[in-house]
Image (cartoon, rainbow, N blue to C red; front, side, top):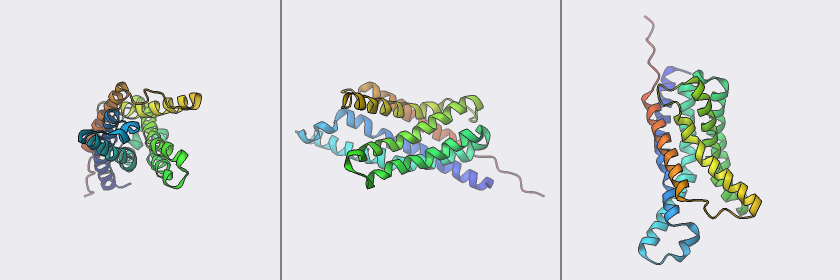
Length: 212
């Protein structure tokens, strides 16, 4: 890959991770305040406005962020792929494309599983980012804060997997499937993702000198 292409992908990927962090986070605090099960009982303008915002946040988090994560993971791969080795390089590629495929396949399957795929798409991308983060702790491709990819990818897949496992065992989601602790951890994850994007866009490959 040409150095100019790496620079472009690095910059684009950094911005995509920063915007994606905000887009993904936007749903969770609003859903915590105005849960879906209570939206039909909204009694005043404030509740109705919160419900409307939560709906927009849902689309940003699970409809838009998979594409932003795709661009962001490709940017990470372009910048650090040669440093982390084949596994780290390939896991970013898997996460970049498998996540959106899983999420958007919800539009062509039955309603009973569509919601699960919609939630799972981002989880796949984040899980692959966390695996890259484990490699990054060893290879240290970033100039600083090599723990960020792990923090930026770990919590949401863990939260979703735990909730789905509970549903398989008990037949229903746990009552605290979105607790204050969960929202706090998602917030920490998105802060780490934003910081990772900022570091990525600031760490563009150095220009190679033109031959004399």
